[in-house]
Length: 388
Image (cartoon, rainbow, N blue to C red; front, side, top):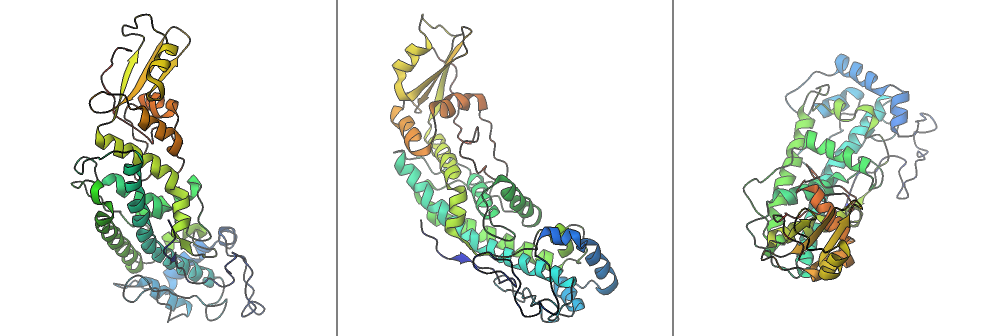
């Protein structure tokens, strides 16, 4: 899947396409600024400075208090938005016109504005990733799941994960900590929509994703306006709370669909395979040594079921057989082999660990990035059955 475009962000002074951090000559020799980082923010105690400045110099208005703060700094033309998203505000150079250390606060606000615009663009990227991936899973596993059994909230989790990878500053990072930072911001300020009464249209996912995009983008726009209009020192939505601790003080870079896809695709394919198989009625048939074993052993079980089954022997006379079956109870060795070959799953993970999960869902508002996360792939369990 090729990247459609970049989620653009306004240029931060000194930030080249290579991520360099040197400041430009203009303004730097007469007004040297320090590296744009959270460490600089902490060193200069900018949270304290900005709180005191706002208290002394900014009177809360009914709207656009971010612009009021910028004006108090001496930047009356610093408009992050006049008519919604897709506008970019520019902090200029150090001391041109805003003096240090206030300029760092303005840079952080500029980066927040860029981040919100990037979120808006990333929603379209996320829709494309989901729309292209799910039909491939259905075709890959040779199944035809019905359209009225998989709650849409599962795809909203995937969308939240994808846009959660958009970094506040710098390049896209795929680590769990980077995702957590983005998800926490999104859940705290964006309030993603959740269609509790809709189901995945497996037969036409691409068309259905338009509704998801509209819902998410409207929430991003509302979140943007909420922060823009809140008193700057509001404890929840004020811009000083949003940029606190220097989270947005850095060097912005563009984000592409390929960047986001790289971070989430493997785990989404595993998760999506589980959703599609569940919708088709694929499940796990479980039997253990407390049922009549007829003298059979784990070795016999593995030989009998082939790729469709797995057997775990604890070495103390107890063993458990798990077989992947369709809704009619027939073993599905072909599907299991495809899960092994194309999705990186093992019989131990897809079958044995699945039973241990007992239908638990490790996803809350988002998906884990590691495709090997236990319980990411889950299937329902049949009542216990005899081994053969």
